Length: 265
Ligand SMILES: [Zn+2]
Image (cartoon, rainbow, N blue to C red; front, side, top):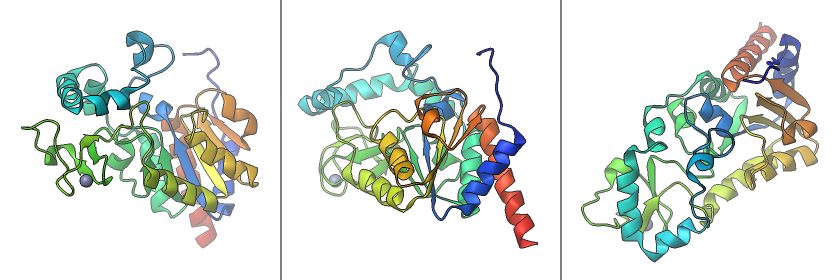
């Protein structure tokens, strides 16, 4: 832990809550910092899986396409390794729950996540796009349909799409694989409507996700970050709420709910 354990003040939380309630259309962008708080190791940085084991091949998708049967065999063998193990036991943390609450309050309209861990869904979030896919799902690379992993029979590899007999692949987007266009379109549509973005657990430097947040800012929208440390995105944020997302976001959701109640009474 850094010596600098800065925490957002109540005044900052209140200012952010007011900004959210003043906005017409709020979206959120979330990243690895939220997963880390649920015990999922990051890929990059100190203690990151890629730092430890080396980066996966940059042409992972092409390797998959060249020999899908072998790729599926590798995937099945890897089910219990250091990445998949934590994903299986991870639970949504109070940060995931707070964003789901903001959605339930009608304040947060859409969530874009770079995380593949399924935790926003498990927290009850409905309107979301997982731009790097979801580790629990299988996707047809022909028709784009998604299936729960347990719905797909693996007696014959590679498995075929039950709808179109196309090639099935894990939904997680591999290096070299295009992000499914309908996911990008959805993100762009919601970003175009947004006048405020909550950036949580991410330095928002990885494209295309970062672009959606910055686009809203460029149009004059509000950028509110909830991040443990100052990062690239902090410089352009209107409000920076420092602290773990599992602590800051519940305070923010509570402040929004309080203001709402006060206005209604
Ligand atoms: Zn299909």
